[in-house]
Amino acid sequence: VQLVESGGGSVQAGGSLRLSCAVSGNTYSTYCMGWFRQAPGKEREGVAGIDSDGSTSYADSVKGGFTISKDNAKNTLTLQMNSLKPEDTAMYYCAADTAPCRHQYYTVDEYNYWGQGTQVTVS
Image (cartoon, rainbow, N blue to C red; front, side, top):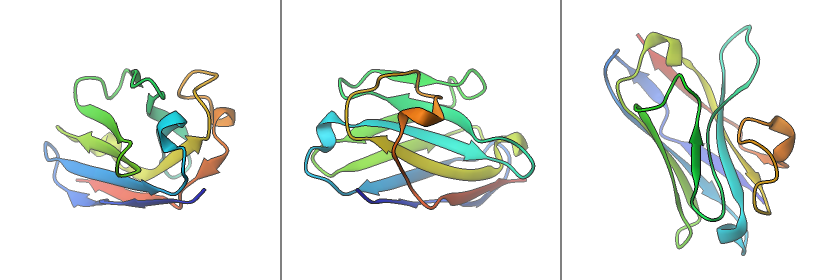
């Protein structure tokens, strides 16, 4: 399974970005997917997750501003980020477990495949 993120960039506070993650694999509809981020000097943290049944979970810090979605026909994962703040600046990673979620979305050990990351900078 390969994951390739895109859509990162630089934006002013209050702006929006849309991250995408292209996922290889023939059974994508059964995957548990998540978005994580890691700022310099900080631990990787879960931002949002989506299970095979479409149920979603979000970190409190992004609720109301970020939306995770999964297109099973196109094997893509998306994170729509609105009302961005400087504290959202980080490298963003998508992650996959090739089975329905077993743990909370923010559990790093849930996922066995990771993308290379895409940088988001909010000033």
